[in-house]
Image 1 (cartoon, rainbow over the protein chains, first blue to last red):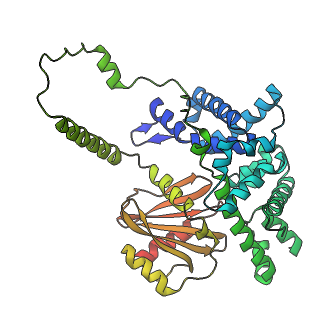
Image 2: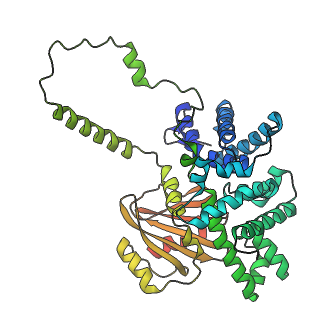
Image 3: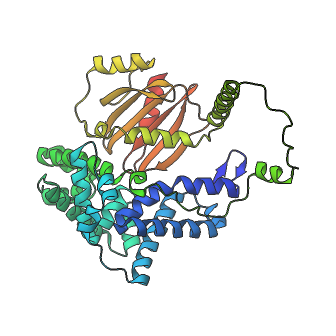
Amino acid sequence: MIETGRGEATDDELARLLESFRPDLMRFAFWLARDRAIAEDVVQETMLRAWRARNELRNTTAIRPWLLTIVRRENARLYERKRLPTVDLDEVIANQDIALALNDTDPEIGDLRRAILALPDEYREPIVLQVLGGFSTGEIAKELDLTVPAVLTRLFRARNKLKEMYGVGAP
Amino acid sequence: MTHDEARELLGAVPGETSPELEAHLQTCTECRAYRDDMLAFDAKLRRALELDWHRIQGSAPPAGPMPKPPPAAATVTKLMPKEPEPLVKHSRPRWFALAASIAAAMVIGSVLWLSRPPESLAAEIVTHVEGEPRSWEKTETLSAEKLDAVLRKSGVNLGPGMRPVVYASACWFRGHYVPHVVVNTREGPVTVMILLHERVSATQQFKEGGFSGLLVPAGSGAVAVLSRTPMNLEKPAAEVVHALR
C-alpha cells in the first residue's frame, strides 16, 4: 500500500509519485515503440489510466511494474487500434534528436542501442521487460502469453543476436 | 545439467542461480567464464537501455498527466485584495533586492532539501549504483590493502565475517564518503553501501530501476544491499551489519 509518513498518500502526493516515474516509463515506451511521439502518447495515456484508477493504485505495493504493464498494453493497443505502419528503423536512427540520445560517451553503448532498436519485436520486448523492467521470466511469460521455456529461448536468442549485431560475436 | 542447458539458461538469465546450475558451474570453467561474460554484457545492456530520455524529448515540456488541485498559496492570493501600487519609489538599491532574492532562494532550497521525502534514499542509492555499471563486472577478490584504504577514507571499520569483496570505492554520497562495495554470493553479485549518516527506522525492501534492494538499520546508520536479480538479500545484509559491530 502506498503510504507516506502521515498515512495513506493524498491525491497530490500520488500525482507527484506518478510523475516521478515518467522518465522511466518514457524510456520503456520508447524501446517498445521505437518512436518518440508514440512513446509520449502511450505514457500520457498510461498516466491518465493510472490516475483514474488511483484508488486501486493506493492498494498496490508494486506501482512500477503495474505502470510498466499498462505502458506495454497501451503500446500494443495503439498499434492495433490505429494500425500504425511498421517503424522504419533507418528513419528512427536518422532522426537527429534520437541519434543524439542514442550516442554515449562510450561508443560501444551507442552501438548497442542501435542494435537493440534493430532487434525484431519478438526478441526486443522480452529483453526490455527483463533488463529494464525487472520482470522475472514467469512474469514475462504471463505478460506476453507465452510459456516460460519459450521466454527463455527468446531471451537467449535476443542476447545472441545483440552480441552478433553489436560485434562481440555469438557465444 | 548439461553444458548446453547451462549455456541456454545463462544466456537467457545471466544472474540465474539454481542449485543444478551452480553444481554444473563448479565443475565447468568454460561455463563459469561464459557466465562472467554474460553478466558483463548485461551490465552494458542495462546501461544502453537506460538512455537519457530528456535528450530525446526535446524542449517541449510534457503535458500534465492529471488535474491537480491548485496550490493553497494560489487560492489565498486570489482571494486577497490586490496590493495597492506604492506611491513612492523604493529607496533601497537594486543590489539589496538581489541579495534578498538570493537569501530567500537559499532558505527555500534548504527547506526543500531538508523536507525531501525519505523514500528518495532508495532512489538515490539506485541512481548512484547505476552510475558505476562496471562495478558488477568484477570477479577477482580485492586485496585487503585496497579495501582498507576505501574503508579508512569513509571512516568505517569492518570486522571479520564479510564475503570476499570484488569491488570497493569510497563514493561521495549525500555529503559523505561512503564505502560502495560489491561482494560475490552464490546467487550473484551484491552491491553494499554502508551509510553511517543515514537513518532508517526499520528494514525496508525496495524495487527500483530494475534493482531489488534492502535498507537495513545498522547502529545509528544504515546498510543498503542491492542486486540486479531478485534474490534473498537478508543474509548478505545481516553479514555486513554483523561485521560493522
